[in-house]
Length: 611
Image (cartoon, rainbow, N blue to C red; front, top):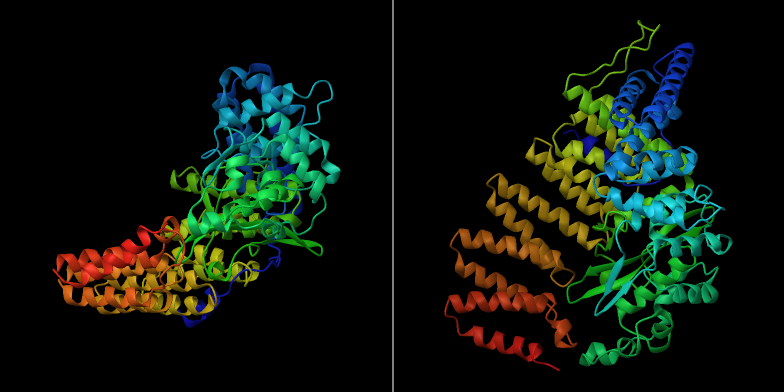
């Protein structure tokens, strides 16, 4: 790998539009393709309406999409959207419920904006399709004669994908359950003018972090009446008094005894989880996308606030409120309200770039990614290129190599740089060793222009599989070293890069170099987070394999002596690096029949038995 590539790859994230890509076809050819696609889509929709045969319609729409992929220009995003939408909708409806597919189709064909918004927002691998479309039925049933679901298309779609299952949240010992989907939709639509960012122009990908509101309707209205228009809801974290009696002495919290709800949290206070829950839920109630974020430092876990903060004409996610200094260098995690799994705050942060994209741009970004994936399937099955449109037999199809697939992904990101699915597709291709050195260089440049310093952890996520598939181990080592240095104050990322270096050297048999990498993390970050424990465990495994018990005891003695002893209640102290390292140290001392084991065990028991 060249020095130039290393330099390019070290660029991190900031929104800059890519240079336009010249269309592959002439203007007359593009018009002919557009006319052909429009006619064929119209005929296929009419045939489906007459026959109700979704299987036949799906095959026809896929054929038309293939034609678009092969012959439409990059400057014809409307064709990609129209064809991809048809494929998605006719695949989702029968998969959700064959018996209800035609009735739902008729409704959605009459409400085109909603149909497109929902079909493109759905993640067919993660969402429960039956739940999504049952929720749509529920919302329709609650509308009455004045159906406004299409008017609030992004809100409707967000409610459908978030509430495909009952929404339940666990905040330490307290459990909260959201209101029904129709009540949530009615609250937000009825208060659209009071919502901080509005609703109609906000992409569904951001609104999912609003409508996943777990509070009761009374609490939501209380929050709206007290905090409407608040531009910095994260600061509400510190408006909640901290319950030190619980933290220091493990006494039951007042808010748990008297009822866990927003007014009571405001009145009686709580710990960090309750402070974060309060601020986040208030934010959602006034229309601010917000997330409850957690992370682990060297001593204890913590919860803080992430919310979309307006910055002039743009916006950015703020993850600093309630995030004490110890956690500034620790990656946060939050629940993805749509897919129900955990995601990093870095993925959420990049979604801020969507605030400048219209819902239409987001749909088209999704369509271009769909096209890239479909092209890959066609190329692998030798089904590419598709036949040229009738009357245009001499028209040349676009290529189907990896570079051509990447070009389609690039068009997706030109439309919406915050569309993280496209970024992850590039990372997946790198992970599968399908990117050449030139591909990596090109995409490093794209990342440099689109990303820069705003999202370092997201950039590390995307670059990591590119590094892992670089053949020359010395080049990989150089990159990990330099990338780690660019991570600055992000201790977790610096440690991650160093641990990856160690794992790399282990695989190549360079045990000494690997151990040095792990030891560097232990020396520098032992009090900063659980990532230091990973380095310690890897170093331990190496020494155990080498039958170097003497060095292993020295390592644990060194690590334990450098770790800060916690000074709070046992229920929290046992989560600390100090306690976990001490426990493991005792294990190895006892195996070696070392008298020091009893002394260390006594220190741990003192904390374990504290009240």
